[in-house]
Length: 309
Image (cartoon, rainbow, N blue to C red; front, side, top):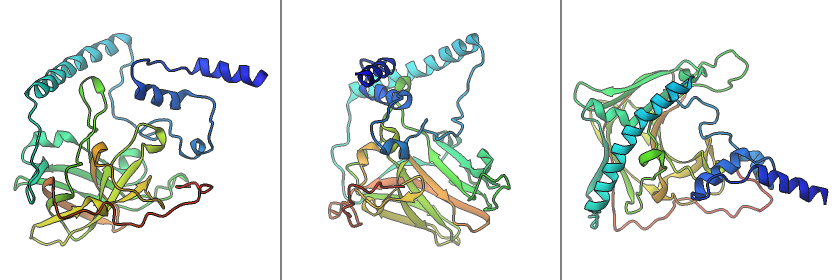
């Protein structure tokens, strides 16, 4: 009887605060709850979506500064909400996806196009000495370049180092509401780029609502030729393999193309030295002859085996 009273008291203290939105309430519940009903939560639980890394958001110290930043952000959110309402009223969806026609999502043709991307490296978090940057090249293309260094800092905390990453900002609606990129009509990823002979990782993030899904990502290795010639890379989405926190999962699954949150490119091939990847566009296309859902075997894992440990 005493255990039931204790459990009821914990539920009341951690009750859902948002009666209108189920998803935010679930996220808040997983962060604040004191009782774990499954051993899986001890293996995968994350306190925040950034796993302890700096979010980069501007934080005000005083109440007046917080009010000032809130009003400044409110103007931007209202403008974005008006734009969403206009698009809803116009209602002009794509109804015909023709074979061989590439729909471009990101192109680097002016400085404002760089605002959609975030560039990070291990040195930004005091975990290494790599440096990188994303800018417009002299020819008018996106240039992801820098210097990769796999030297590990002597702090007794870091065991592996050496990575540079470029990633799109999270898709959001007005008033900081989560949204997703819907690529379900497409079958292939299409890129036009010019590399340096290195291998890069293409990452498509599909982070879900619960904390055990925040680090879900589908990855594919991009091999570049190097030299002065451009290459057009066409990758089926079925070739992307499922990973989490850099670990390939035993149980593979088709990519949920309707829940894409971020797109990124990472260099971490342990080859120290300068690198550069010139990008013309990143898009997708529909191939009616491609029917493969996933290119990897669907292993049946025993129930007493926890994936990812």
